[in-house]
Image 1 (cartoon, rainbow over the protein chains, first blue to last red):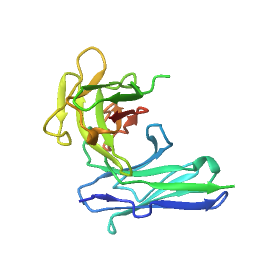
Image 2 (cartoon, rainbow over the protein chains, first blue to last red):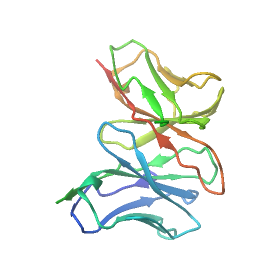
Image 3 (cartoon, rainbow over the protein chains, first blue to last red):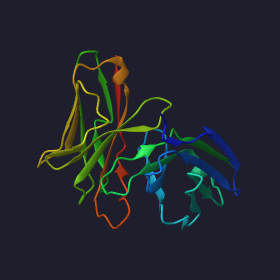
Length: 113
Length: 117
């Protein structure tokens, strides 16, 4: 049973436009959410996170939105660049330090120039 | 570069052999996590260790798999009597566990790609 779901396996966007990656979760005990970016043959790279006490966190071109009532979060990338092409993983954890991350299956983003 | 180090990057083993995967956490980090990624899947948690202690091994298969993080040296994930289904990418992550009311980020190594022939 998947607790973190990324229902879109892939997304194609033109350079300069907005990329929106979505993630749904089922476990209401999750308290912390993270997005990771992964290139082939490399490990995931931390991008941005959000605590459940917030509904938005912004870092440069990346913004994460959290809707707790809908158990949904999204990552917005504006403007999208070709270098953003990668697999994006949504992950969730409890509120204690040292808890395991539960990952979605990932969404492959392709940004064309 | 004081990032998470993993070796080897690629490992080929025949069925029945043992595989040893090593992970050195980031400088200053004392918490290590192991994850496995099967083809077309997300990363799945296996085990969480602190120095000389296994904290959470709820994701570890019950047989053939073991992990350690000794006082000195890297963390090691050991797979005995490997089978073809063990072929996957194994990622190690580390964190500082500076809990400030939210989870601390985990930083990942480049992974070890295990192929069982």
